Length: 320
Image 1 (tube, rainbow, N blue to C red):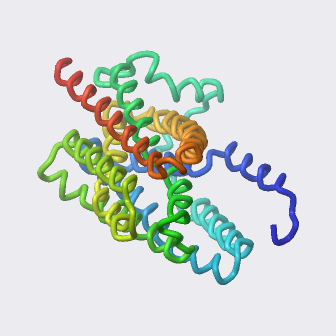
Image 2: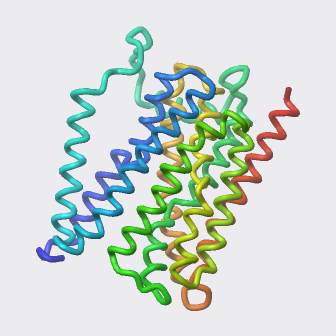
Image 3: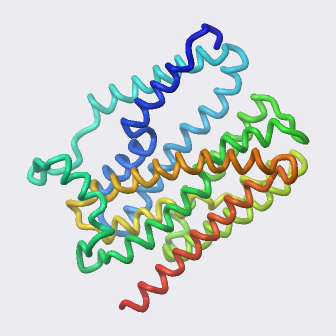
């Protein structure tokens, strides 16, 4: 806006980002890479958690710095910094990251077959453990999990700018950083300790309950103290994500890990688009009557995730 540039360019570059996969593809590639480097079991779950912890570090740094950068330098220079960091990441990956897949497993496959392979798990059984119904239930659980946090940041920003909080960019930055520190770093780091004494299924249930309680608190918050208590209550919110991915990875053949996470990336991208529109529409429609209602929707998605995952637990026990 400061340069008078047409908004058409924004739509163009957002479309390019969408076509190339965006953050969903980058995250899924990280999981696929870790699958190649780890064995089935606790080490893979913790490796998946490390991927999300590294994302958490980046979000913490961006959350703190963005508020000051926007305030002191404006949006244009902020975007230049972000673009420079993306260019650095691309160069680092191309030059220094080694191939994770053994050369003997490389094969040439048509694009159509690659796209089909990403969804084979939901059409037929892929192995003795990789039953179709398991993938369907786990994917539905992951969809509900994704819908419980994707789109949160955009409406949370509007929520914090509105009365009774009326926060500025600096306070918003510090709050978002506290969320990432508690949930993405401290919470996810605890998975190593939790796995020594708890089963994966129990960790997912704890994660779902933590998420539900945090969103209910956020929905009814009336002051800064209540809002800043939300990250502490939801400390285990993101634990379900690496665990569900790990469970899906463990029942998938080694040569189909990339296909699995490609399909998950597609699902995550669709959920992102749908929930961004849905959450903003809900917030706009309810802001005058009950401004925190949208967070109850997030809590409902967490509850749905719990229900679907419990169905998976019961089904797995009955099938043995």
